[in-house]
Image 1 (cartoon, rainbow, N blue to C red):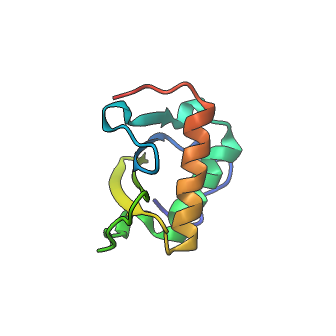
Image 2: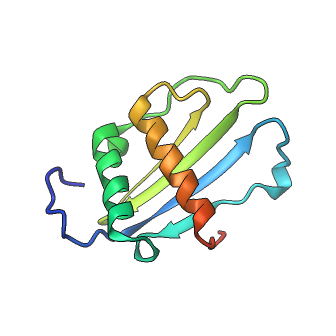
Length: 117
């Protein structure tokens, strides 16, 4: 992803999210949620692209944090402009920009009918 892309440029790709853990987690019911950028409004795509740049998502490496009791872990996968990366983070997410990205992805995956993998 290149920084400083024109705001009117169409962003192609998809975002994937899988949530595990939490107080009432049932492993058999956890499914990956996938949202295509084609299904999102331009401002939503731009928000994701901006957070990806700010968090330097494509260069992030997993932290050695282990999930505490009843903590959730999030596996976020992004494919944007031919680049793909998947990152697993656990609560509490220490990087505020990465936490915001996870929050936005969760919100969007709840709003859109999902294509489960």
